[in-house]
Picture 1 (cartoon, one colour):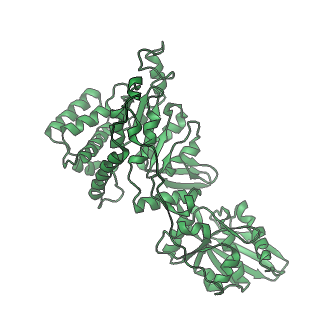
Picture 2: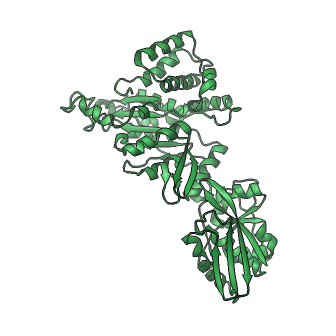
Picture 3: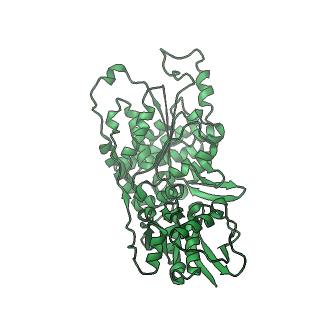
Length: 504
């Protein structure tokens, strides 16, 4: 007799259903796991044996064979422990077959039978819901998985609790969805003295998800500005929270087992490798650009990143997704993020400061910012020079707008965009618009078109640059509450695009 249980194998953010077949037959005593398991899955037999022994359940002196089907799909991770144990318990007649076959199980077993949390509970719950099954998982994963409303989630503390639940001795109540509250922040835009132009660029970037480049001398406030960007971004919508949390669940970084409405803010160090930024490694895991999905990717000291790393950003910025191709895996991860890059104007950092500029002007700046290729620089919608702040300004009291005030305008602009793109799948913010959609929503008036044509001829704008100016102008119009894109909106968009020192 063959008993069956079900679990999942992860391919990117997709969780594929795996059938766990267990046969107990006459023969020399053995416990074999087949079906392309990795080392962690192969070691499951020892953890399962010890957990059953802790419950005073002895394995029979027979040949036990566990097959993971489909057999040609690689199986990786310790979450196969629980489904293997469930299939074996069903084969031994300890729990009913129907309970094993109607649930998708995942979880790691400790030697005493305690269930340990594993990554990927949220994608597994999505697959279970699509298959019309319940999800059996560790209690620590229950709040996370319960966000999938069409799936009943049973969170158990131990294998013994699973047995008692299956046999009707002590039913486990379904898990309730949990949510991590948005953490309060003491980083307010009002703390930034001066830098009004950079603050305006930050607001536009947040409203339309436009990529932003900040260039200025050391200590001018570039990192301080970027750190306050999350305070002006609206909370994640329900679909965005689910998308983002699926990636975080796969990486095991969800806090407190629930889903957060706070937008991700990732700031990798400039020594990070290409696999760390884009994704990869032996299991083709998500990189920083995917962990920043629906949030912000802040790359400080941008020219100091490896040239290979910088150039790999070009395609994900445009496509909003990245395919990680390895010899044993080809997976696609979403990566629709807002890129904020910060850089000094040159190696010494004081190219734009007449009192402290080095003797290699202007070659020092050309060599340093020249590490950023033209095609990559062309993908930044907003380019801002951040001048040094005078010491006299630092003594002045904070009198600028608060993050709360700016966030209200950003939220209003994003609400307008949500209505605009409601019937257009794949489009959420103005930065996503292209082709006929962009022509329709950002068609300038006659004066604006004349200005844009003159600027394109004068400065040699690329087609990408032309369209990005239209997108930024559309966002500026949304912030102003304007229905149409007019000349002032285009003029401001052009001013952020044609900064002399940063023009590509």
